[in-house]
Image 1 (cartoon, rainbow, N blue to C red):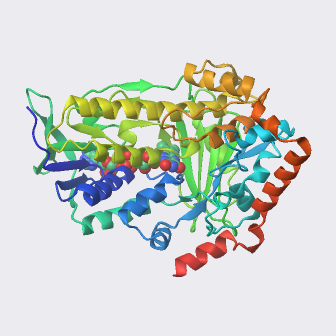
Image 2: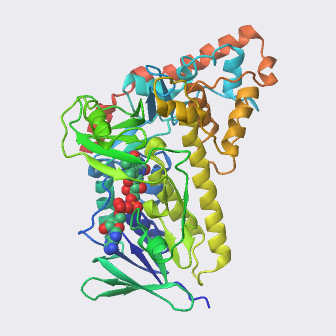
Image 3: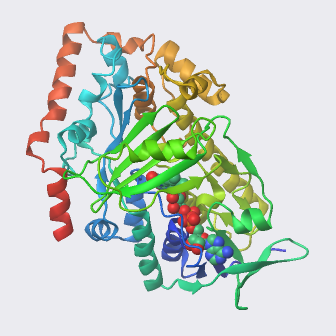
Length: 496
Ligand SMILES: Cc1cc2nc3c(=O)[nH]c(=O)nc-3n(C[C@H](O)[C@H](O)[C@H](O)COP(=O)(O)OP(=O)(O)OC[C@H]3O[C@@H](n4cnc5c(N)ncnc54)[C@H](O)[C@@H]3O)c2cc1C
């Protein structure tokens, strides 16, 4: 029997819990009561600092002022990710949030570059990309123009703990009830198996109609109580540990994330206003924890500001993100390593999906099945994009990179690689988070050069093509000189 949803209980007060509380209260708070339970004695995971551009939409729907957000979360601007040593040691490429050049009707820009002989190395593509040019110049400001040539998609690096605290204040102000307490038992309906209430240490009970499990990796409701199961992808994404440590910031604040490949993993460096966030993601089959820690600490280039924190994970996804009356959001729903900063985005998109499918009249299978179908596809598409970074490499210096290059990959990814390699064509799967421009940059950056290009690119005479490319480059370069530096931009914004 369906029960109308009058009360939503969120378990967990990490980034996932407070993002869920803020958005659900903001959008459907008139219809439902929301209570969030968290335990200070357990705490949050305490990592997660880089995001992707859709976070701006999330904040804007909440009505958050950008300057206040940047000030409160110690945020900086992120224009993309610089991948170093991924293709081979010493080589680097940029995955920009922007897109190179300008496409002709029905002809993507990279076909023109290929025809002009400019796609066969890693030098040219990015010269036509405004995000890259800004990143190289250390500058930033949104450009006020109606011309899409000057779009600068950006995201943030921020302190995820401060973001959760910011959203906690926000949520409580708009009416979310917060309960401090450790969940010790969970009461389930004997017939339906639905969760009925959380029983806290000390005897308090918190009951509800719909439960959002944001309890972190363990998935206290979705897994420990409902035994939903996990689809393990660690045979493809073999990194299973990370060591994180903050360090002193540098004089200049980079406007991009650095991702530096090592012989059995990769290191992130994320610039915040008050510190650098660092970590090494690695495969425990190929590095001991001590080796990983030594590599990380010897590659910081500034003093540490805390103790290294070891985190273990298994890459994969919960078999059903929504099971009975429990929707898992955040780490409880699955984990994909932070190579493309997608975890906070997965939280965001699960919340929006839940809002779209909110079961106001009662939980039913059609909503659950649709939600789970979309969630599965989203996780799989991101998974494929991450595997691409590992699979297409030319590193010959370690067993790890050799294992990556020779591993079997999902058919969906193999198809995408083949069609690009043989024909130069890119096709975006429906709803894929990553656009063609992202796939292109990572494919070319990792050394996957197409053999062919689309014949439409032949419709322009060669002399005209070269002139046109030069003109696009000049247009992209034009605004850079007058822009403020990233630090000047932040200083001005934080003061307002
Ligand atoms: C190494 C690493 C690097 C990452 N980097 C990035 C990144 O750059 N970008 C990005 O987008 N994401 C990143 N992430 C992911 C990001 O950290 C998480 O997605 C995000 O912090 C969400 O965590 P969470 O809220 O699901 O869980 P947690 O932060 O673990 O919160 C769990 C909550 O549940 C509560 N809880 C648990 N059990 C109980 C109980 N019994 N009773 C009461 N309360 C309970 C806890 O108190 C806590 O409030 C990274 C993750 C890892 C592991």
